[in-house]
Length: 423
Image (cartoon, rainbow, N blue to C red; front, top):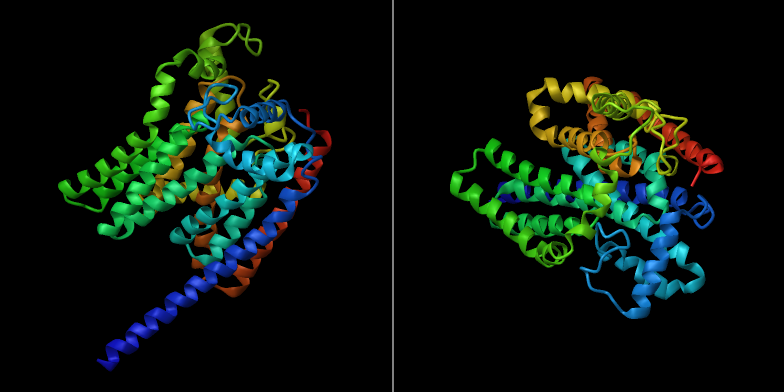
């Protein structure tokens, strides 16, 4: 009896130390991540057209008291749900600080995204690698722009999407009665994503696919697996019902934005091309170069300069190389593939639906949903280097140094970008 109690105390002590370590690492990440987000927040970049439109829309919502979650955003492709925190900040900060309130909402969402990101990477590697990878992700100049500017609906999809996969993993961890709660929560969260930026549909679809394949790989008996799938699907359907009713009555409005960016509806000549085969070849090659080879590409269009610093690749060299190596590890290693295939799928589906089939790739807004996946895949490379060194302290110190160096490099690159950005 004393032996069992002693073992219980050892396990409890180990869990307490692990939890404390996680809290310390996350707190440090959040502390380090605040400055690059609030640096000259009201001045850099100059106010963007979308921000003018968002402020005008939200002022009208407040004046008329129209807070219905199914109220159309001004572009009709989503609702105002993601802007509820902005409305709250509008009331607190007052009319002179509407731009600050709008951008602070993106800051808050981006900081909240770091928690599930860290915990997802920790589950795949360990606390140290999770700290390194989360720091790099937080300072990404690509991510920083969306973390600071008032495209709240886009940033919120990334944040909520990461919580979706975190909660799914919690539900799949033990598959007990407690799993019902996490899977139901995941279904509700996926439903909330449906109200936001259209590319979030990729998270919704692949989360269901991930749940189904994970249950299969875990060899869960058919009836239990079906129960979990039905819990996810039913909570998702219940959550989206009000929005489905609204959009079904306004399909022309709802699909307006999608039609505008659809490559099938592009005006010809398009980038000097007139033949459809040449246009699709251009779309494929440009998308592959941008989001698999991670080259610096100027896809033209008025939106691109706001989303990506077109003079440099979308990710720094450390993350690019780590992503390529990590992708090979996942593809060639069955164990890693089963754990991480969904992150590769998110990238590939985003490239197809968000780049190849839409105008003017590389478009950073439509690719943002894939950004966490690049870093999560990179974490496997960092982990393998650390593990293969037999967890050598000098190797770990080198990885931490590189993480800080390239984080500062990304911040410097972002600040330079803000000096010549075209909005």
